[in-house]
Length: 116
Length: 110
Image 1 (cartoon, each protein chain N blue to C red):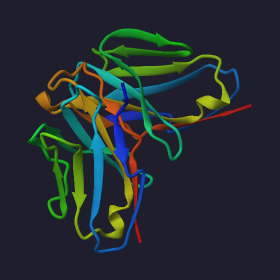
Image 2 (cartoon, each protein chain N blue to C red; image 1 turned 180 degrees about the vertical axis):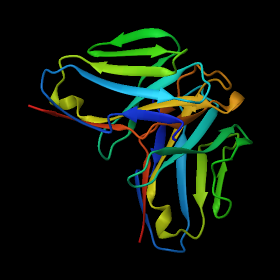
Image 3 (cartoon, rainbow over the protein chains, first blue to last red; image 1 turned 90 degrees about the horizontal axis):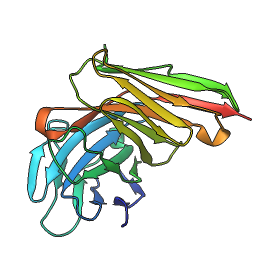
């Protein structure tokens, strides 16, 4: 049973370009969380999705950021018109259940985005 | 004041020493996660606990829900234990999203 997969592992973009980050949850998991780790800062929640639904996007910047988790395929975090401040490590985590505080979240290896 | 606080922020130990990392939180939760992150690396979930104590190899985690405090202990520390250790608590009701401590950078010297 493969773990959570993220690709690419490293992504370099120039200012103004788009970045697409992909996350494939563990088999059987239908809940995905995206977290961001800015340089020298702790991890912060961005968005929580279930299949075809955004449940909580309270941590997402209001502009340029969007996320989806289609019925088929990976979850995608999309950043339009990237700026240098978007440079960070982006982690996704998956879990099989929602609303269960005792449920473990399994983290992917992260995508390290560098904006030149 | 952060809702999840860890201490110490940095810790240097000699190989073989017993290590304790503490986590205190102010949000109301019923469980807590301990995570490990190597420099430039991914995040590994070490423990999720809602009461009492859990042990895995040389790692021990304890939690006191009433006092909102948890500790992570490493016995017989080894240089390969060098990493950032992060505690995280679920909040936000049904979403189970995590709020994280700032992490403890542990360096174990041979």
